[in-house]
Structure formats: structure tokens, C-alpha cells
Image (cartoon, rainbow over the protein chains, first blue to last red):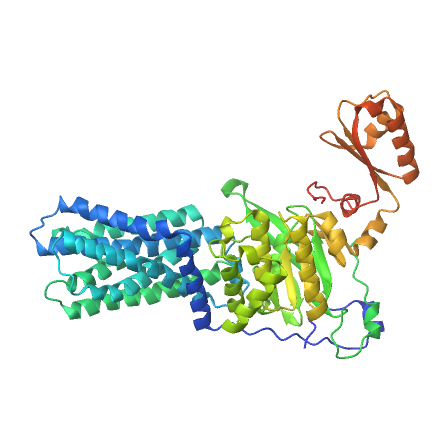
Length: 273
Length: 342
């Protein structure tokens, strides 16, 4: 035990040298338990915010597909696949990137992150739990969009299970970016703006077939993590190219690891500065 | 003016036994500044200015001061949320400046914000907090049920926080702070917006934790009545400094035996009345309320003059009261209105 501060002269005279015992701190929450707790709590929010979280994204994506049906050449496989895969992954971008950026931005602006920061839980557990929850919110919407899209554009439904990989992995990458936007933006409005821009980029670069794009736009598309989720999904259509599916998903996973690590660092940095 | 708390009780303690005289928080020369404004009018504000503070184990210690006095900045440093510019904080034998993350393992903190929990139900908010305090699932549920009973939250347990009234939401947040025992509770204005029944439930629950677990409670408030009734000792903050620290009784003794005379006028008071003109010279006026501090004898005389003369017609209400902590704050040189009564 150490007493780091001096006591007054009077107390030194009257009190024997009797340092008080240091109180042992309570244990910290393990990463897994913390992550599951945050995840479960976030999932329960669906009960309250069901409409914006699940339906808006689907309406938006279905609307875009209806619009694109009149624009793209429905005779071309690559065009139809790009529209459906891009619109499906757009649901992930809307919720995991845009809404998570807003959520973290608002929590940070209201000092509401203090709640987590004064509990013995690791920042990684909070960031991963929230990101996982937001990625999960997107699964029903993504599946619904993919099914509706397949019916609208006469695409096969056989390999739709690929979405069970595409959603969590592109979700990790996009939620990681959303979390970084929300935690690093100096003001919540800026976090919202960045989230919107990220989603707009996913929309503009995701739903058009790559072979119709100018060179410069293709480079931009390659820089956008959501494109790899789109490409993985496209590769599963028709005669599936599993190597391409795996490769694209690996990029999503790698971006996810980097962005979620950066988000964890930002979460820690958002205080004690 | 800051008075170090009495340390003479230490001489009768038994070596090795933690007692009430043992320190909980020992704060020395704590200073924290922050920048405010944009570009040209950018300036540095000193939120905490060389604060010394000793909070003993097992006491209910209050930080009293108006908004902007530096209470929240101080509390954010005591809970490891903010690093001080200079100074030391010892919490139960741990150096919080070097290891701020230790605070989360010793302190249950109730901040002013409930944003992180707003969309959860009351029961889930409590259970989640318990789990994040490293309780296993079974214990977290048991403690959740116990605190729901204790604060009589059963009826609203399944409702989301954001659908509750301000007082109910605050009570639910208090419940999250109380779940999973901690040796120190830091509560930032815990009873804001609560009705008297809820307030009593909170103070009973806080007192139980002190009596049964020896918990120390650090309470931030700007409510003087609450401060007088629940606190063992109180530090009065003004403009980032501790301007006094003592028991509420000890602080009130500093004002001497002066009393406070409050008059509320329904119409313009007759200034030709001698009692009114005398009061007009010293009274602090807030709308139609005049407030003065004076010797009890003088107060009685003036009150008799006002209530027996023509001024009585214009008078709506009057009170003669013994000094409150607000009077102490003003007598100590506090320059801000903003303490709340009741």
C-alpha cells in the first residue's frame, strides 16, 4: 500500500504510522462476455427502433432496383447482377456505415460514452459488440433485397447463402468505417455527413456494372471496401467463381480488422485527452 | 479558507482496520484547464484550480456549487474520464492519474447522460450494466431483480428508458449505478426531476450501501436542501476552487446567527414606509422577491414594521429562516446565482 499524498503535520503527530490497506479493484469483464453483453443490448434496440433499422434500408434498395430496371440493359447478366448485388450490399452500407457513424457521433457528443468508459469493459468489446449488432441488423434487409432483386431481374436464388458470409464480413468492414467516422469526427453533424457520403459512394459505385465505368471511377470503386462485398456476391451468381468469392471476402475481412482496430483506438482516444 | 478535514480521529483507530477516517479520495493541487472558443476568441478556461480534497471512507460527501463551478470536471477526473493537467488523485490506495482505468473497477458512476441506455428497457439496462461490471449471468439477473424491488421499478421494468418521464428515467439510471457492489459511488445529481417518493427511495438505497457495505458516496448537487439533509460533509465549489469544506452544520455556523428575511411583493412596495426603505438598501431582488440577511433582532423589528404598516397591503408572502447552505455560499463570496432550493 502506498499513500501518495502527504497528510497534515497534525495527523503525523497524533496518528501512528498506519497506512490504510489499498482496496483491491473488482475484476474486469472479459472481452467475450463484454462483447456479448453489448451485442445483446444493442440487438434489443430493434424492438424500439425497428422501422428505421430494418425497413427504410430495404425500401431504399428496392426503390433503386426499380429505378435501375428502367435504366440498365436487362439483357446483360453482368448489369443485372451488379444492380441486385449492389443494392443488397447498400443495405449493409446504410445501416452499418451510415447509422453506426451517426450513433457513435451522437453518443460521443452527448458524453454518453462515459457510461462504457466508467465500466470495467474493454473498448474493443464495446466497438465489436456494436459493430456486430449493426451488421446483424442488416441481414434481414439484405436477404429481402436480394430475393426481391433476384425475382425482379430473373437471377438464381440458389447461392443466396453466400449472404451469410457477405453480410458479416462486409458488415465488419463498413461498421468499422462507420465507427471510425463516428468516433473521430469532431462534431456529430460531421459524423453524420461522413456516414452519408460513405453510403452515397457505396450506392453510386456499387450498383453499376464495373465494365461500363471510366478508368478513374474503377479506381475509386476499388478503393471502396463495400465493392468487395458486392463483387463476392456477384461471383456467386450463374456459374460461381468460388476463388473470387473467397478473395473478395478476404479483402472485406482484412479491411474489417484494420478499421475495427482503428475504431477501438479511437474509442480509447475519445476520452482522457 | 479551505479547511483540511479533522484528522484527530486517526489517533484512536486500530492498526490495520479500515475505518471511516481512512482516506477514500485524496486530491492534491488538482488543476485542469480547457480551451474554448474558435480561432480569434480562443481562450483557456481553468475549470479546476489547485483543488485539495479529502474524502474519507464511508462518508457521504457532497460537491456543492452552481453550474459552471467545476464540479463535473472534478468528477470526471475522479472517475478516470479525464486526466488532470497537474496534481494527484489517490483513490483507495491507487494512483488515478497514472492509472485512470482503475477507477472503473472501484467506482460506480452515475453521469448526467443516459444516452447509452435510452433505447433499452429498464430491466435490460440494469442487467447489462451488471454484466459489464463482470458479474456472471445468474448473479447479474439476481442483482437486477433485487435493485428493481429496492427502487420499486418493477412496474416499469419492461419499458424502454426513453419512453419514461424524466424522473423515472433518472431512477432507472440510479438503479444501474447501484447494481454490482462497488466501494465508491459517484453520483452526479442523481435525483434530478424525481418526485419526493423516488428521492426517498434513492437516499434509503444509498444509505443502505453505506451501512451494509461501508460504501463511500461522492454526490454532486446544486440542491441546497438535499445537501443539508443527506451529506456528512460538503465542499463548496466556486469558479474552479474549493471555497469551503466542512459539515453542513459547521458551514452554516460560519455565517453566524444571521437569519434570512424573504419578502414577496404582489404590488410595488410603498418606499415611504421606513421599514421598506431600509430593506430596499440591502435586499437582493429577484423579480418580485426581496432577500436579505441580518441579525435576528433587526429582522424581527423590520418584519413587524412591514406587516403592521401600509406595506402589508402590497405584500404577498414573507419568510424568516435560519441560514441555508446557499447563504453560506453567498457569504463565502460565491458570485453566482444558480443553487436550487427544494
